[in-house]
Image: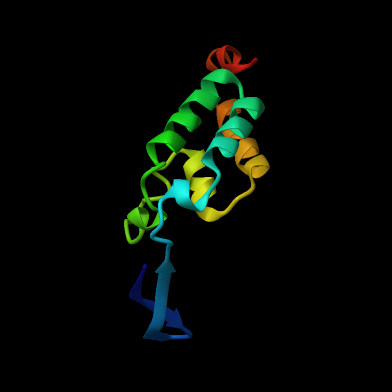
Length: 117
């Protein structure tokens, strides 16, 4: 599935309208495209339980959805949990885990301490 939109941009002093933004996504479900049980197990091992639980829940909730469900929605990826967003974008689990941990460390020290193993 794909969508396209025409974009306006400034080239020198001229506004141009000849650029297209094309977005594509697979229509199969996440469970058909990815080994979700293996991915879930990796997050369970790599993250503190509280963080892993939220990310795993989001992955389970998306099991029967398709990456194409997010196609064309303005803030679709920013509204997803990082594990689902990373999976949708094809990021390795190690990178996504690092992003999740970094975001958690930005929390207040009191909250962060409750999430550490």
